[in-house]
Picture 1 (spheres, rainbow, N blue to C red):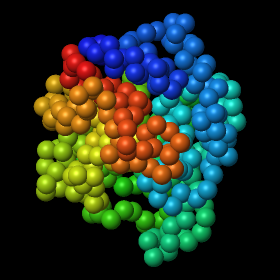
Picture 2 (picture 1 turned 60 degrees about the vertical axis):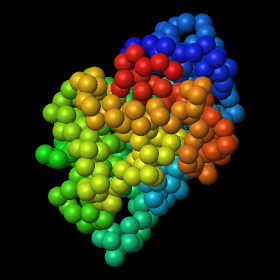
Picture 3 (picture 1 turned 45 degrees about the vertical axis):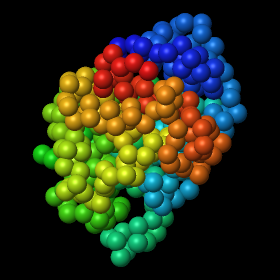
Picture 4 (picture 1 turned 90 degrees about the vertical axis):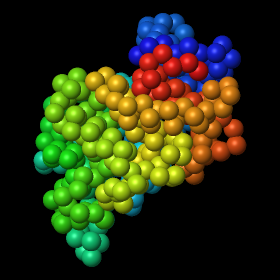
Length: 332
């Protein structure tokens, strides 16, 4: 990624923020090595911060409460992914019990499970049970890969199974046998835009899949939906006003999440549709290059992106990281 041409004030503002912002800014925007003293200091401060320690403690209770909606931002599924996004590793303090709990919930076919309850009227059995769907399993696998477990045989098996579900138009709505005939509100031949996004997010972390036919197909599906957003809304996923609102963490189907994922594929960065998305994102920054949340998740109210009144350092970091990849040489 080309380094950003930061204004001094914006760079100082980011580095003066919370330790996870300083840590990821130094790594992702400034390109400093993990071994640099300033990077290590920021990382140590992040690991001991009460908010991060709280997430680690909560995640150790995996699989936690029943998952009632994949948009439930406070569920352990999304806490796990956020810890991975921050840069925690499997051997960090408090993480071994988390990793053990997640790995213990692998299904017979491979993907990791969460606790669900699907009503018989929707094709389920109406009881709490461990199961997986293509709108949660990729997030768990993504987290484990980011924690440093990409070569773990159990993780490799789940990635292989999930990537094999790809079709000619991307990834569909797919679920484990326990969930019976349940699927989302759409035609079974359509791709599921959210599952497609999560699968691209997972495979972007793995060099063996980065340039695979599956990722090329999935990326084209995502960008085609952007190109034809007025006419095509498979499984009721729209790319309208709500899709374009900036929010964190990266939980649902929205502009920032999409750009964060697609901009990781180097072979895609010259695509005009990706650059159009990046231009929309860039237009939302203020005169100082800072970004303010336009929508929030109540469960994350303790974090700087859990409000809509002031710019968020974490959101600003995410925005400029995606913009810098999609529009090389972009200036803040």
